[in-house]
Length: 594
Image 1 (cartoon, rainbow, N blue to C red):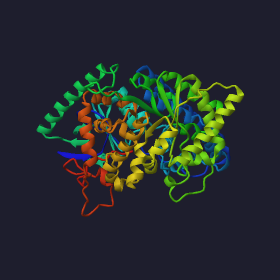
Image 2: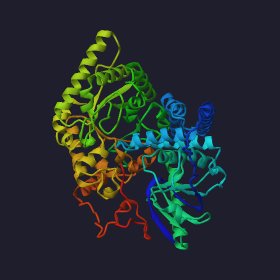
Image 3: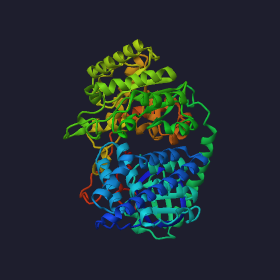
Image 4: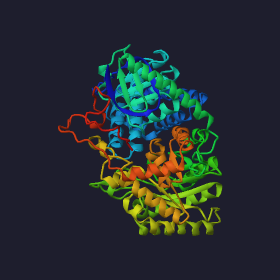
C-alpha cells in the first residue's frame, strides 16, 4: 500500500481501477516556411481553430443539457478567448511576416500569453493563462491531426490519473462517468476544481509524482475530503473507505432535502445568509439553482482585463443590471475594480513595483484613475434601479480611503441626477476588510458604510505576512490562525454595535470546518462557490448557537500548531510531499490555499 498527499479539490470517496492518462507530445517544427506556403499554413491554422470552436460549442450544449451550468460557463469563456481577434491576428502575423508554420506560430503566441498571465499574483488571471495554454494545446493537436485518448471510453467508475487535466478532459470524464480524477497539478480555485464539483467528480489535485507511480489497473482510493490517494490499499483500508463512501452518499441524499430550508442554527436563534461569489453573469443560473440567497462578491475585473480599452459605462451597466435582476430581490454585492501592479492592463500603465501586493492596487488605483472609477460607479448606480445592488470598495486601508471613494460616488450621483438617469439614491455601500489596518479601524469606518465584507484570503496573507502562493511556506498560511480570527471577531462586534451586518467572502466562507467558528464570531453572511452552499447549510442547521460560541472562543485562544522540519527538502514543496503515512513530510495538516 502506498499513500500520496495532495489537495482535496472536489469531495467524495471513490474506490476503483486506475487509468493513466499520459501527456500527448506534440512536436513543433521551428523551421521557417517559404513564401508560397504562407496561405496554406494560414488556412491550416484557421481550419484548426474552427474545429476546436465547434468541439467546444458541442461541449457547451451537452453541458447545458445535463444541467452543468458551471461547466458550460467555463467553456463559454474558452469560446470567447478563441474568438479574440487579437490572439488569432498575432498568430496569423507570425505566419505571414516571420514565415513560421501554423504550429510554431500557435505555440509562440500561446506561450507568450501563458507566461504573462502565469507570472501574475491574481489567481483568476493565472487561471486564464492556464485556459489559454489548454486552448493553444487543442489547436496544436488539431493542426497535427492527433487526438488524446478518449477518456469517455475508458470505462464507467474508473479513476483517471494524469499530470494535468483540461476543461475538455473533464467534459469527457463526465460523459464516461469517471468516478474520480487525480492530477499532479492544480489548485482548489482552478477551473478543473470548479468543474469537478459541478460534475460531482471526486478530485485530488497537486499530487506530486503520482503518474509515474501508477499503472493501469492498479486499485486506488481517492479521498476528496483530505486529498489522500492510496495505491493498492490493504483489506482493512479498503473496507474503511467503502464505509466512508456509503456514509457520504447518504449525506448527499440529505443535502437534496434541505435546499429550500432556511439556513438557521438548530436552536433557531441564528440565521446565516448564504450567498455566492461570481466572476461574471454567466454563473448566475447555477447559483440560483444552488439555493443561494444573493451574491456576496461579484468581481468586475474580467470586464476590464479582457478588453483593449476601458469597458464603456453602457457595457458595464448591462452586465451589472443583468446580475441584479437575476437575483432580485436578494442583494448583489458588486466589488469595484480590484487590479493593480500585479496585473498588466494595457490601458492602465503602472510602473513595475517591487511588491505589487503592497503597491498601487484596489481602491488606490481607482482613486488614481478617477475617470475609470467614476464610470464604473455611474454604471453601478444606474444598475441599482433594477435590483438590490450593493457597492463595495476593495483594499480600503483607513477612513481617508473611504471618504475619498465616497466623494467620487457622490459626484457620480449628482451627475446621474442632472442627466435624469434613474438610480437608488440609498444604494448600500460597504468595504472589503482585507487589510489589518481596516480591521483595527473598523470603529471609524463603520460610520461611513452600510456593511463590512471580510476578504479572508488577503486578510490572512497580510496579517501573517505569508505569501499565499508560495508552496514553501504553505503551512504558515492559515485563515483559522487566532490572530486572523480575533480581527474577524473585532470587525463583527463593531458592525453589530452600529446595526450593520458583516460577511465573509474569502475561501474561508466555503470551508465547512470553519462554519461553526464563524457563526460564533458573529458573522451574518457567508459567500462561497455555488457547489458549497448545501454542505455549509447542513452544518449550520446542525449547529447550536451556544456550541458555535464555545467553538469560536476555543479557536481564538488556541495556539496554532506547526511542525518545523529538521532538514527541509528544497527540491519539492512541503505541502504536497509524498510519504507512506498520508501526511506531508513535515507532518503538517493540509493547508487551505486561497
